[in-house]
Structures are given as structure tokens and as C-alpha cells.
Image (cartoon, rainbow, N blue to C red; front, top):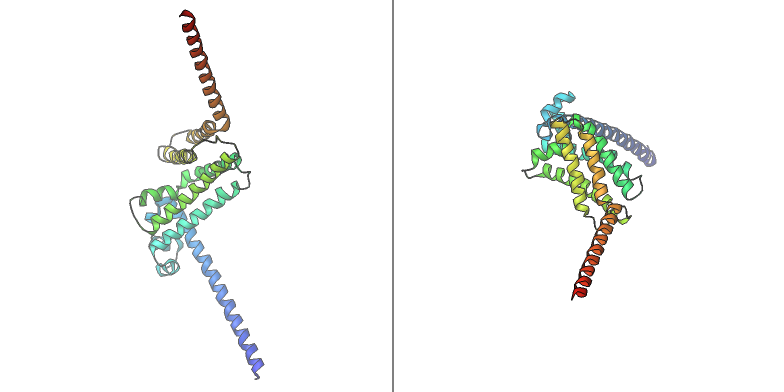
Length: 251
């Protein structure tokens, strides 16, 4: 066998080995995604704290060692679930809203998409909310991953509010952090009222609350308030002038 033939044979063998490794890697990734998907469903029902390698192995009908091989620890499993949850959160809420024009249309789309997801999670549960309850007084990577995801999302809402101000859809002096706080509070309140207390009409009240926020901080409301203040100041000035004139006449 010549050197050229040997080199060709070696290259073909390496190519076959590489292809096998690629298929194995792809299969491994698919298996991990399937495990994370099952873990997401479990976490929605029992919370992140309830997740364990053993429980997940039972649900997926895999061995504990097989599940452990994909994550290495319960903590890494929980973090993987948080990352996948946030990825789906973005895909369903954030990216579709980007198709809307900057300003109020995009902010309204963000809230509408968020509400669509909430109506589903009122039955299954929200990992961000249940996770906050489980990890609010702890430290560590799982809490950090949760907090980072929520802050990233609220940062996106904050940018949408700022853009609405820049487009002139909201009052220039509107406090954007207050607006984000109030919008987030609507979502949290909705979960509590609808999921925990089972209060009828909670979804409608949340939507009305959002409309009131826009009305309160909207440009037209600001202009109306400003005009009202101007009219009041003018009226006060006229009254003071009349009083002064009357006093001078009497004197």
C-alpha cells in the first residue's frame, strides 16, 4: 500500500469516526432537551425545589446515572430548566412584539403576549414566581439564574417604555421605572388573584389596569393635566389681579 493510499484510508476512517461522533452528540443533545422538557413540566407543578435527579429519572423512564450524566448535579439541572424557561418566554413574548413599531404598539404587544402566557400558566404555574418564593432568601447559582432572567425581562419592558417616551406616546416626564413596576405588579397580582384565590374576572381587571396605566402616563393625559394647571394658574392670576384692582380703587 502506497503512502497516498494509506493517507486516503486514514482520512476516510477519520471521517467515519467523526460522523459517528456527530450522530452520538446530536442524539445526546436531543436526549438532554427531552429531559429538560420533562423537567419544565415538573417544575411548573412542583416548583424548582421539588426537582431531583431521581424524580426526573422516574418520569423519563431513564436510569438515575443516565440523567445525571447530562447535568452532573441537581443544581445544574435546575439552572438548565431556568434557562430553557427563559428561552421559551422570549420566543413567545419578546420576539413577536419586536415586529410591532417602536413605542406604544410594541409595549402593548409585550403586555398582550405576556397576558396570553399568563392565562396558560394560571393552570400550570410560573417558574419565575414559584422560584422567587423558593429561593428569595437563599444565595447561590440557582437564585442568581432566576434573578438574572427576571431582571433581563424587566429590562426589556423598561426599554419598551423608554422608546414609547421617545416616540412621544408617553409623557416626557413619565417615570419609566414606576410604569414598569406597575405593569409587573399587575402580572403578579393576577397570578395571586386568579391562581390562588380563584377570583372571577381577574384577567379582565389586569387588562383594565394596563389601560389605566397608559391613560395615566399617556401624552394626552399629560397635556390635559398641563392645560388644567395652566388654566388654574391663569384663573388664580386673574382673581389676584381683580382683588388688587378692587383694593386700589377703594383706597
